[in-house]
Each structure stands twice: as C-alpha cells, then as structure tokens.
Amino acid sequence: MTVLYHTDGSAPCRAVRMLAKEIGVELELRSLDLFAGDNMKPEFLEINPQHTVPTIVEDDFVLTESRAIMTYLMNKHAPESSLYPQEPRDRAQVEKYLYYDMGVLYKSVLDLFLAPLFGRPCPEDAEERLKSVLVFLEEHVLGDKEYITGENFTIADICIGATLTCLEAFEFGFPDAPRLEKYYTEKIKALPYFDEINGPGIELLKSIKSTEEATPEEEQEGGAADEEAGENTAEADANE
Image (cartoon, helix red, strand yellow):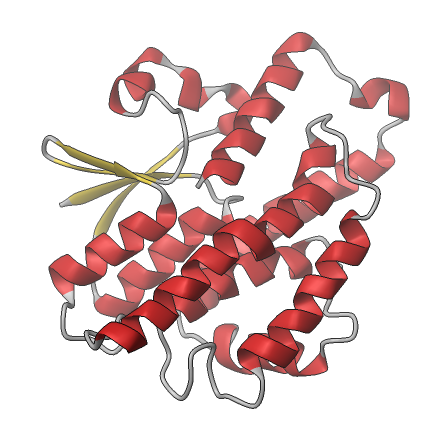
C-alpha cells in the first residue's frame, strides 16, 4: 500500500488525496503536525531530508513533490485514463497547467496568505498580483471551456482546484473572476469527495487566520520554537 505523509492545511497534499479518491487508490494516511515540528523529527528526515509534504512511500521507494506524485499514481494505476491523457499534445497541456499552478497560482497564494502567517515579508503588490493571476486564469486558461484544458476533467483541474480552496479558506474570494468562481463551485466543490478531503484543511486555515487577526502584533513574533515550526510549515507548502 502507498503511505502518504501529509497535513490537512496543505493544498498540494489534498490534491494528491483527491486524485487517489478519483482513481480508487487506497492510501495509508500519516498526518504530520508541522507546527509541532513532526517533519523535522529524525524518523521523517530519514525518509525525506527535505522535510516536505506530501511524501509517499512504497516499500523502499520514496517520492516527494505533489505533482510528481500525481503523475506517478496516474502512470501506475490509471495509465489509460483521460485524467492524464496519453496523446502527447494533450498530455503536454495538462502538464503545462500543473507547472502553472506550481510557479504562478500557488506561488501567488503563498506570497499573500501563508508567508505573513509565519513571519515572512509579504510583497507589497501580492494582493494585486493574485487578483491579476485569477483574471488571467479566467480569461486565458479557463476561457469558455468546461475544464482547465478543455471538455475533460484532468489532474490539472484537481491540482488547480486544490489551490483555489485557499481563496475560500482565507475569505479572499474571486474578485473580477466570476466565471472562475462558478467553475470552482460547480466543478470542483461538487466532487463527491471534496468536503471529506478539503473541509478539515479549509477550517484549519480559517482558524489560523482568525487567530492571527486576533493576536496583538508583539505576540505574533512568537518564540524561537514557534518561528521554526512556522518556517517548516511554509517551506513544506512552498516546495510541494
């Protein structure tokens, strides 16, 4: 069985879990409390010296990076599925948007929402950049299509859909991107496993946001242990 080391708050971890549900792959879930430094414990560092999640283990095989994990699971368990099409150009389109999520969309979410929670500077233009990314995603990626790459649901939808949950968790919404919001509501949130997998993570991020807003600035600096846990969390999310 495939063992998945994960944390509920991580959108990339939830993308892996959503895909596994979609293709009927059973995962043995091992939850890590990143705030407690579980990912820095020797037993996990022996598995993954980068101390990032998600991480999967199958016997002596270890794989990190959510998008690599997703394509691996597809190649192993559902190689003929339209979720990850075999035709080279169709597959390239799917992979393009996996990389777009990693380098543009998820990066914009990290800069605005997650970095400040862990004491890292938020770029001055982070909010406007995220708004711009969402408009681009609506106009030039989704367009008038049913799904991200066309009329078929693919792993690109799962990956990007998981990232979009952060907009809900941090109550940012979809400013100037109503069609993208409709896509998220009607295509992603309607998935039968959406609430089971994403609900706890969304609520966790909401609670972190509420705590941050209610904490006086001098207390937000925290102690060394809290700062280290926060850096570990941010790095785990950012890298994967």
